[in-house]
Image (cartoon, rainbow, N blue to C red; front, side, top):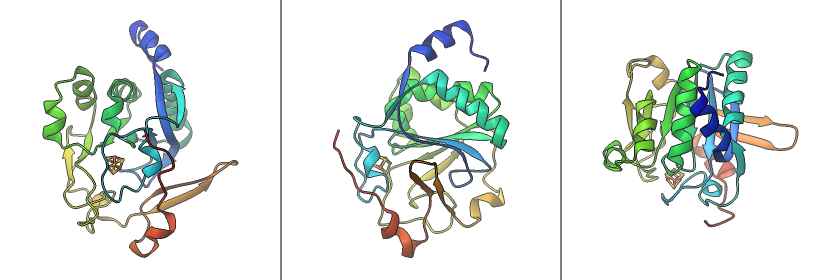
Length: 215
Ligand code: SF4
């Protein structure tokens, strides 16, 4: 880890609301990635596939330095090339997400963010943490999930209204990886079954989770 003194203090004090972390996945963006789902989203897209991550209550409170440490371990152990932020809504946790994105870049990891807000809305927030997050993001997938227009061509994208913005030159839209088949990963952590990625359309009702709390 290469946190400077100010960053160290901030990261040591900052607690992140986390719904789930998967240290190495190939189902949430290009290559192998460390994925973190934030707990809490102010939006309510009909058909949201992570309803249990909507309330701001719940989840795990994890100190940011611990997550940065986990990223570094994932890079060494699994050769992950980047981190992916999902939710929940990463922009609703902008301060933590910005810090984690900066630290990911310090570790030479790329950053991919899924947001229910459009890029135009994000830019209009005029929030320094949001700007900081955007400045450290390589790929932004933006816009609310719309179950009426499910995406059928682009990998990792939920609905066809959502745009993929390449905010750096680390990735290219013509990379064939965007058109390979989606995958679903199921893993047993020793205490629970963790599912992430995209199920085949005919299996969607088998894995869709229910909202259990309201925040
Ligand atoms: S932005 Fe994402 S997490 Fe929030 S309601 Fe929409 S699909 Fe669900």
